[in-house]
Length: 161
Figure 1 (cartoon, rainbow, N blue to C red):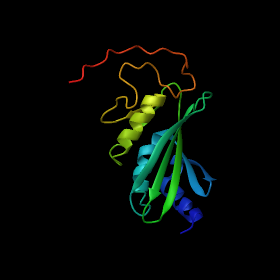
Figure 2 (tube, rainbow, N blue to C red):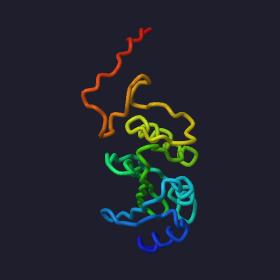
Figure 3 (cartoon, one colour):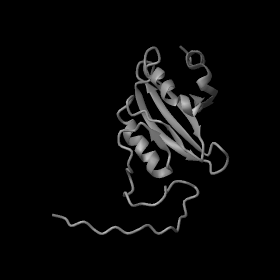
Figure 4 (cartoon, one colour):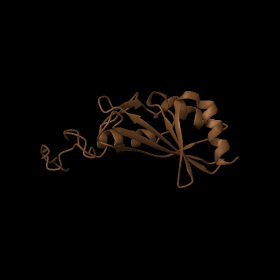
């Protein structure tokens, strides 16, 4: 099955959840509605698509417009040996999307990183805490609006036993 027929099959199965299709360096790219991310990826995880591996989840901050943040999911099908990239825009006012933690184990860590760095919330996440910065850290350092000269509150050093 070629990439065009695979994309056609995915579009037929996901219907209006797919807002657009593109190609990037030979990999198919689907643009999804943010509200449909979890149901769409749940379908793609199962046969006949078999995208059993969530390679990565990241975020892009475009700093302007209603869809300020764009989540980018990278999937891989072991049985087909095919990558798939999915994108979904979330609004700047309430950047939130459903968690994929029940579908892929590594989604918990990837979502925590995106939350910590960009402030995008993942609804239904079992452990929604910061991953790379400490709990008293103010703001989200990879947002374009983050003041680069902001001084963070200092935490006392812990005693080492």
